[in-house]
Each structure stands twice: as C-alpha cells, then as structure tokens.
Image (cartoon, rainbow, N blue to C red; front, side):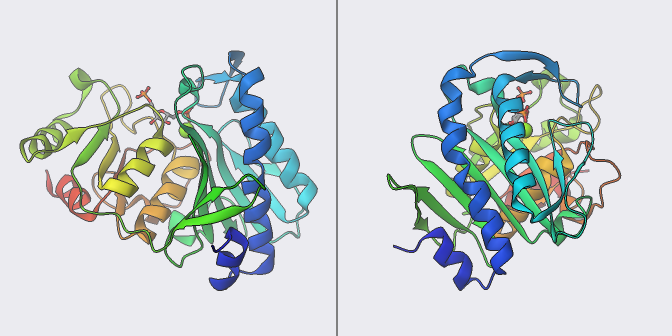
Length: 294
Ligand code: AHM
Ligand code: MG
C-alpha cells in the first residue's frame, strides 16, 4: 500500500514540501494523546472573540513549536493567534492553520481535525496559490486528506505510525447531503431559498458542528456544507485564511468548488489574517445553484 511519503514523491512534490507535510501529519499522534488531559475550555478568547478550548491552544502551541524547530517555515498564521508568527526569514514556506477545528465537539468525543495550508512565500495569498492543503481527522481512524495540486488522496495512520493510502483520485460525487450553520430564523433570503430548493429536491440534513468533519462527509458522499451570512454576521463565521482556503483548495482538486455564494473564495487575496467569509463548499452542482440565486 502506498505511503503518504511515497505518494508525495510520485506527485513530484519538492522534498522540502514533502518533509513539511509529513512533519505536520506526524503531530496527529501527540495531538490525539493530548485530548484526554485537555477536555475543558480555557479562560482565553481567540482573535475572533471565541472562547478557546484547552486543545485549541495546546495544538496551536505544539504545531507552532514544531514548525519553529523545522527551519522550513517563514510565517505561521494560526486561527488561535492575533498576529502572524515570523520564523526563519529565508525559509521557503508559510503555513496557515486551524490547529483544532470543531473544538466544541471535544467534550462529546465527536470527530474534530487540524486544517493546514502551505504557501510558497508569504501567508496572505489567494487560496488558489496554495502549494499544498490537507487536514488530519481525529475520528475512529486518524486520517490525512491531502492535495499538492495533483488531485486528492486519503491516508490512514497504521499502528506503526505510517500513513497508508485509503483512497486515491478522490472525486466529490454530486450527492444530496447538506449541512448549514447559523440559526434558521437569522438566515438571509438567498440562503433560505437555496436550502428550501435543495430540500425540495430531496437533500438531507447532516451537520455536526465540526467543519472539517462535515466537509469530509461531503467529500465522500457529495452535497454541500454551508456557513451562510446573516444580518449579525454579514461575513458568516468561518475564516478565509485558515478554513475556507485549505478546504476550498481540496474541494476544487476533487472536482468540486467553494464559493461565498457569489464567486469562488479561492480568488480572494486576504486583507487581514482573521477575515471571515460566507462558505458554500461541495459538489459543483450545489455551488452553481447557490450562485444562481439572486
Ligand atoms: P472552531 O474553529 O473554533 O472550531 O470554529 C469553527 C466551527 C466549525 O468547525 C463549525 O462548522 C462551526 O464552527 C460550527 O459553528 P456553529 O456552532 O455556529 O454551528
Ligand atoms: Mg475552525
């Protein structure tokens, strides 16, 4: 069975890029081990004003320290830090990350994950410029879903600590699942129309509260994950740099798409690190439908 390391080589990824992906993916082991002693919320808030879970800060510190020691990274932009962390100025890569996505689900032992994007050069670039994007999922298995611009592949960590391929050439089927964040009574008309249209066409609701896990379901079965805008949050809840861009890159590489409801978020050059964006990500048909509604 092809290992993650072999796959990256087959894709023609630069050795330094492969080394960086493997290094971050290996951190799934200590992150998993840390869940048991970091079950609670911390007394701190992140830059978006959300209360941090102990695992948010633990994973952020752990991965950032690992990247600092690697010598491969110029900048780290993390959902859990106000500012970009500057490491080695001459290093080739910048890492953007949500160190622990879905952290409200830790207490209930549902699936959460780590989302990562890697750019050459600086961290504030359009998502279409990503050199690699991947996420680790801490579910019944520990998996990595990865793209270096040559499609998408999924790997599972075995008992010897090696990622072995589960699936190559992943394509998002059109599918019929949807998961939408926000509160129904606060949805704007366009989003409400979209959801009622797809429900009338037979779409079934599945939403866990972990973007990365919900996206993985959409990647597998097809459909759409949405976190829409509202009057109170005109740009929705999720962040362009750490969440939309890496996941959108993977969706596009799997034949799907990501949109803010009007156009692709992969084209947007971020103006600030914690910029939010409405998100619709999934199969192409679903994204065309939301974009076609006035
Ligand atoms: P997090 O990065 O702090 O975990 O927040 C983002 C999460 C997403 O994983 C998830 O889809 C969404 O927020 C859930 O929000 P809500 O509880 O409003 O549905
Ligand atoms: Mg998140």
